[in-house]
Length: 50
Image 1 (cartoon, helix red, strand yellow):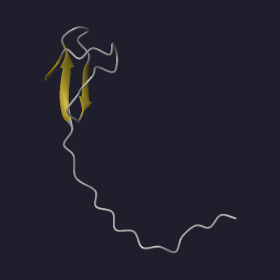
Image 2 (image 1 turned 180 degrees about the vertical axis):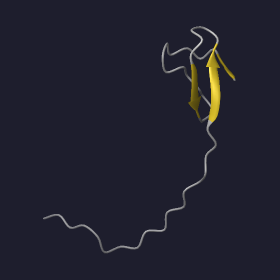
Image 3 (image 1 turned 60 degrees about the vertical axis):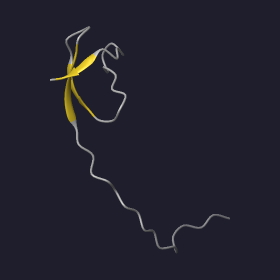
Image 4 (image 1 turned 90 degrees about the vertical axis):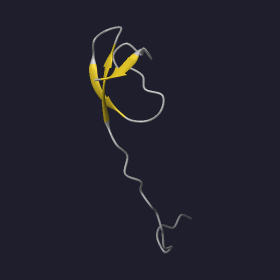
């Protein structure tokens, strides 16, 4: 038997900054966040902040 609810949750959500990048291999411009940014079009890691 499954049950939902009841408990108190204390979740803190950190505000993350989105940065605009440009892929040096295919020229795609995209928004991303995190430490390891990969171009969503060609999956290249050769990206720079636009």
